[in-house]
Length: 91
Image (cartoon, rainbow, N blue to C red; front, side, top):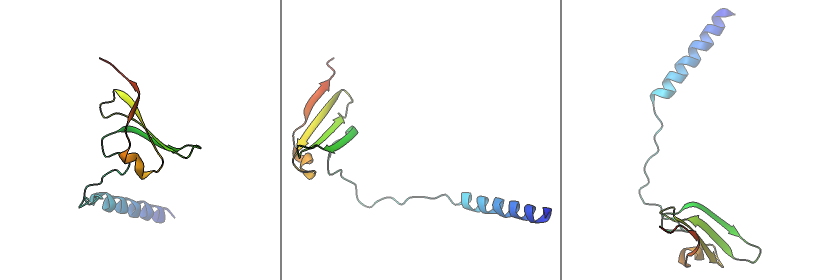
């Protein structure tokens, strides 16, 4: 029984060493991803469809100094609509 436990432990150790010696690498995409909602940098994004039928996209601006909102009748339309500032810091 003790020999069987030692064999299991040795086998598990060998498996872990083999698996960790070959790092998993993600291959780089051949094309650049373009965000369909906001092509610009926007932190803390949130999209919701309100009961009024419009999509609202709220996000922090790329410089983290204001909060913007976009309203659109379609999800892809958020990309083309104008940003409205909800809150912003003035220096």
